[in-house]
Image (cartoon, rainbow, N blue to C red; front, side, top):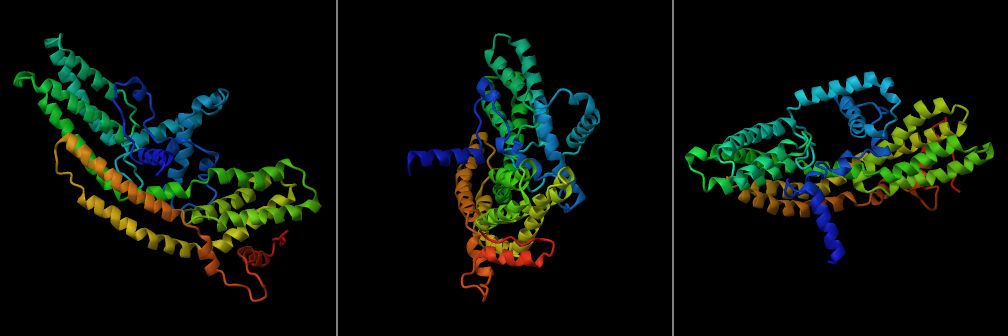
Length: 427
């Protein structure tokens, strides 16, 4: 393995299981506490959450709609100041939603990621435990003002209390482990009257609970990996938007050039589907469906005179309908390949021992399991990246009228079945 490959592996590992340095380090305190990929709002991520397709439930609609709101909250300084007066109602709604989030954040979904997602009830437990310890340290500091160990511990408590409430538990856990270990510097010399053992034990109990919470989330990490991989379509979104929407609205395409332009689009659209890896087949189809609805319900309102935009929308509809019939085949294949990795991850969870009450032993046990899980996740990622084309080629039977059967000719047959679509021909 080359040095570059080793560096890539280490970067990949740190992304899955981030580790944090000393909280009193200034550069560390300024580092982000959540995943950049989970917070970044790309054009694709915002577009994919528009209510274009029928939601599976009302709850799903509210959850998806909250994603753009989270982005606006974190990037409000980038917005034009003139919208302040016009967005009072929106801001009030946002405040109410944040209050509801804080007051009702009690249950965790299967998509919860211990290493990147916030957990307000658990973070509040840490706030109470650290606040109690800080009060005790301040009391001892007044009694022993010359003891720098007490001041150092108090500074460490303050740094933890200043962490963002939306910080991941992994970030807070690292700081708590450092704090518990540092309390030993005082505890090993303190008598009963000056002890902080009660507070130390409370923090240790919290750390044990959080390590168990971390373990319970491992069985869902494959789902998180699959979801992240499925929606890694940002680069494709720009290409599709440029060809489906931007070019039609901003370029004057004469009537005679519409047919050749559609002929150029057809291989692009079908290539987008047929070159898809297993883990992105469903999400790529969904993106085509979203573009179809977006063109049909939004773009035509602003460009009603552009006749080609409607034809592109119907072309997207026909291709997405045709390839949607193969979704069960892809899902079955993906499930078959994934089953062994699922068993491997579950075995790691069963073998992991959390009976230790020593903070260092728990951390070492977790780190060993992290490396085992990383190997399993690499296997799963390779499965997600397997091509879909062989499955599609096997599912689509050759046409007896054609000497050479290709996947595009099959979708062209579907185009003839959609009466409102003028059938494009291959160039």
